[in-house]
Image (cartoon, rainbow, N blue to C red; front, side):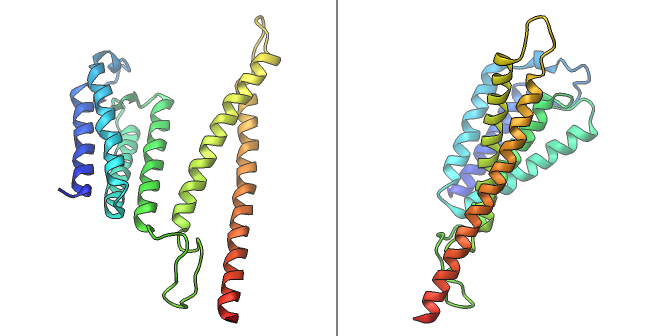
Length: 218
């Protein structure tokens, strides 16, 4: 069996375990559907889901197909969470954690698709000019890397900011706005990451121009 087939089968197995364990429900209008969970099956479902990514990663076509499958799954989950009041995919539709899960699966799908569509090395020769373009053709991959890195940095900044304000500003007998302080730190992190991405892209652009000039002059 090809990596593409194995990775997709593993994803289906993971979803089957989630269904069997009561982690996917369409009629949880009470919001207490978590009481029906079979926890061991939930832990088991995580294993084939993770292994599917590991299996698919070495093969660009497998990455692409698994990414598309995850993107379709994310779209279906989002649709159900919007249209069905009783929908639960691990988390209930009214819980913010479901939105975070949707975002996470969508991000993984984007990373897989980007690396499947553009698997070539960073330094490659364009068909039109025959000139080496380091990093130019992998903009999807770079975008996925920038997005993933930014999310990690922002989450760390929010947690660090909230913890700092909790220790320095909050009192036991008063209101605490530490979470707001954490989001301020997160906003600063977004700006810092944006400037870092801009600087990196300028460096890449200058390298490509220099390489083009060297090839043209030679």
